[in-house]
Length: 278
Length: 278
Image (cartoon, rainbow over all chains, first blue to last red; front, side):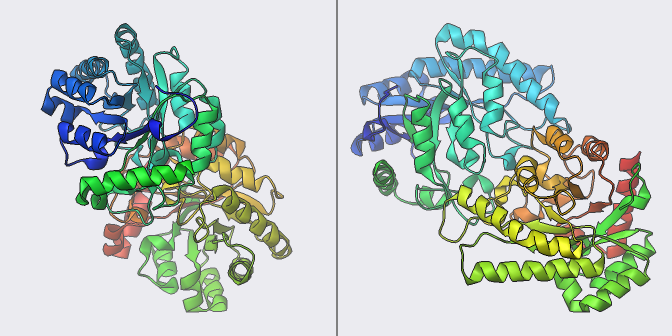
């Protein structure tokens, strides 16, 4: 965590933005482009090996702004739920080893065959309650990420920052917070009010633009800052005014970005972030 | 408007569900399947001619539950805004001639080149204010339709039932209400509370299911009741408890439904509605 005004020392690159690079390559890219922090993904960490991944990042002098991701909690009592909780405990341990500012949690969609959103949302709260002691013990902060309502059925029943906060407030602030990802929340007329309400609870900020028209795979409708319709300055001003002390990650899922050379992507990320700083 | 408990006398078929039929064919289909009301679209009305369309529907003994649609208000002062308002006045006149229970309004997305959602939302309020006297004069009720947040950028900046109500409450209840379309609002954790708050303001109820996975064109991810993840009974119970007296329209945009024979579609609509009635 850094704190203070937003400057280039608070930029982080989420490695999903350069999806085709492995962990060491992503770390090298950040170093080459003087990006001081990185958001990691568990599959790439596992591929490198946890200890080696942690050492690689540390030796490069990079901070780990987030680990993506835990969650997928929406199962009834039984083996699937037990397995999800075990996997999340593992993810918490990984986040601790990596020194990540937060473990990002994506709640999961409706349970298979169910239409009961309220039940699904209770499952999420119950699962987080189960994980809090482990997170406390290992000093890891869990970040509940609201995802765009278009993912409600099959990916994340926590749809707004307000919902995420309602969940987070059930737990201690030092252990459970929320993630503000512009792609998911930009449309919400309550956004400014909810960011204000989130004081002390924002554990991750992820930026990318909303590109029109949406592509066939709605997960990939993200763009570099400025390529879409999102008005970033008020969101950034809001999270800073709410006391958010951490890094600002750029996380872009987009086929064209993935197809571009990684150095070009990193340069664009730097340039657009500088433009945001004004 | 019918009122009382929900029964098959309150079923309406929105003609977009049988998109390839013209107005006379849609009317015949409703008569053949004993569906007592129809939701009309302006392009099909224009094609038939307004007077003739009104006569065709009236002679068949059908009620017009809605006319789709007006709106697309998000323009700065100038010719585009003037043209949108003129077109909406024309739509109000058409709704009056057809005896439609409501004229459905889709607000429009962000103005071209703008990222200012708050401005876009003010443009919608200002445009409705301009239209209210015409609607009052002709006895037409305007229905503000919140659309799913995935359409916020390019189609409708009114994203939740709560937003739509905040707008509607600025105007007299007899002239401005809200549309509850399950495809757009089903995910909202505030839905039940907002339906309750909407007492006296619900002017149209449209049902269709949310099918997983979403197709490439997200406008077409709708399905027959029961083919997706939406839990309809609480929504229907809510709108009835909030005093909604009107018809319940089935409105499905879906390529497979459009490709099916219209009689099969109408039979399925009837059957699924009967199942909902229990």
